[in-house]
Amino acid sequence: MKNLVLKNGYTFNTFANWKRVLCTYPYVQPKYIPKLMLLAGTGTLASPFQWYERRRYGEMLQEIQPHDEPIFIMGFWRTGTTHLHNLLTQDSNYGYVSTLHSFTPGFIVSNGKVLRRFMQSILPKIRPMDNVAPSPDAPQEEDIALMNISPHAYYHYLLFPKEIRPLFEKYVLMHDISSSELEEWREDYLYILRTATYLSGGKPLVLKNPSHIAHLPQILGLFPKARFIEIRRDPLSVWISFLHLHKSTIPTHNLQDFSWEIFEKDALYIFEETMKKWLKERNFIPKENNVTVYYEDLISSPLKTLHHIYESFGLSSEDIASRWEVYLKSIKGYQRNQLVPKPEDIQTIRERLGFLYEAWGYSLPVGSQF
Image (cartoon, rainbow, N blue to C red; front, side, top):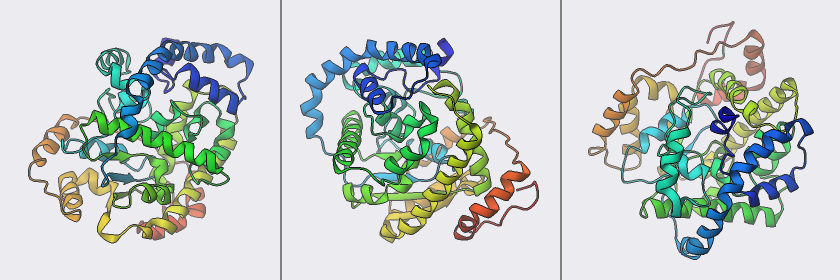
């Protein structure tokens, strides 16, 4: 049970949000009620802190305006967005949504110091999906914060894997979403960014959220001057890592039984449709505000890649280069997961993602090697 709490993104989800989520998605099977009660119990303890923060700081946070030139990392899950985010946030000129913030979005302002010490004591040594050592102060995805304050969050599929496709359609592709749901999603998202802006002292934010690769119209509507870094990776590598991600994270979250075979079909649909939407919309970004990098280059020549990003945006990297070097030295012994594709993975990707290989300039995989 302790292991469950440590590896669950809903550990500090408040009672109020649990109530809304479970009313929206009433699909909990009886055998998972003990898991739900444990998670809801820890969240209930957090509820008074959220109540206090909303009343003490709510109006003040509502008045904060995030900087109008944030940087968005645009990449599908497992394309190297976490590594790039970790590197870019070594620059103290930028703020970000931290892991602590993402787990406790409703009460971090008034309780940050205490929560940081507590989270540091309970975090696992490595993340199960990629062997990265987590830290309360490490940058994190906004969607994790969103799922802890709103029912309008794609990541609720972790609780209800059978609902991944409708959740994807509504909160990633933004299809069949009502105007009131979209407005609440927008306000909840801005609340997260306002809080991050306050915590960072008004600095522009560097943001990484894989679902944003399908949210370009919404992002440009909020931040017309935003800058974007598109990161690409061999699609077959992305696919097998994407599957591994879910097999590592869903078992500590799901509140219903589901078929992995059906889930994999849904996951492939998500990969395919997300990238089709991105390729269709990416030209909406002004050329001077968009730069493309490749995961393989980021791994083999990280400093060259980072300098290229800064030069593309007209930013100076002189003062930050030494910090990049220190960070890269600190992770020198990091061992990435060695995932081997099955023959059916190669065939599937050739058939369904061939368009992405062509768009990104990769060679189609042949046989069992890639």
